[in-house]
Image (cartoon, rainbow, N blue to C red; front, side, top):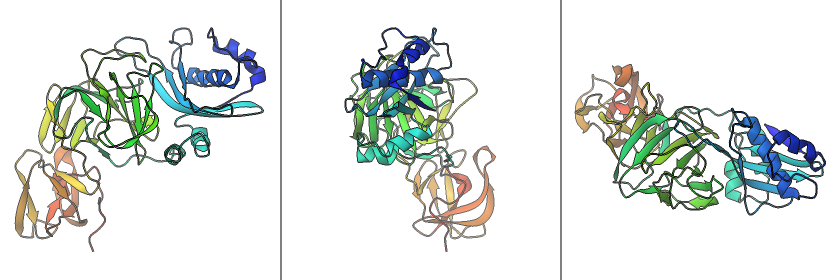
Length: 387
């Protein structure tokens, strides 16, 4: 959605928005009019009435000028269980007719972000891409769990929602309580309080959200490294919702919107949902961790790697060629990570959940493993076809 609001029409806008204290007159200044414009965008996104909804937060970045605006925009949730805030980055440009403002995920957002002089070159490269036509077919997120490699934290909540959308999120708690970036990217503080909620935008269209943090960093496009400290687990609800027991509400986004975390690999665990919200489990090979169990952080799964999943434990057999007619030349235990050189078609096998494939992966030692007993996040080769 794209919204242009002329300064001369600000009195009409004030009546439409219905919020006391929102200065939109021509004498109030460009930044006040920008705030009003972005608030109207937020209201148009709201699924509740203007009267019932808490007042939106428009957080203008310090680098905003009289002609370019940037920041975060949040529809604050009620402070109640089952309520979730909605938040976006926004970009805006002002000309003689007024402000043109757009939220993350809108075509105008990418167009404006790609040419805005107040954004860094790194931001323009990431935010200035219109990804609406892209679809996620690759479940390998390239993400680690949001805490130190080698630590084991509790999965305190299985797949559930953020912003009343798909089940994009899990709850994690324990360890040293230090929440770390699941991958390198650009970090943004979402709530106007500066507390609680961070978004990190990564490469390949992925982004992650971290809510309920305490002592979190303050960021507006800050480059964060993989594993960099973001904050501690906590119970902050600066943007609404509820929290019982210190934890991080970890959410997955792809192409500027929340996506189902079900079936994706985070830290070499494949997250799975059950029928009920907050229920579910995680799989590392055949090892299954229910809600309340620990998830050991193995680090990220490489894009040319697979996790051995024998669908029951034990080990998978290596063959000298892509099929059961070839000699057995070794084996790899369930849960181990293997590097894939290339792939070939061979004999058909059936793996977990009835997954059936004739794809075989070639390993560095020249042997082959059936992809029926590997988790790669794809049904096609992850490193090309063997000659």
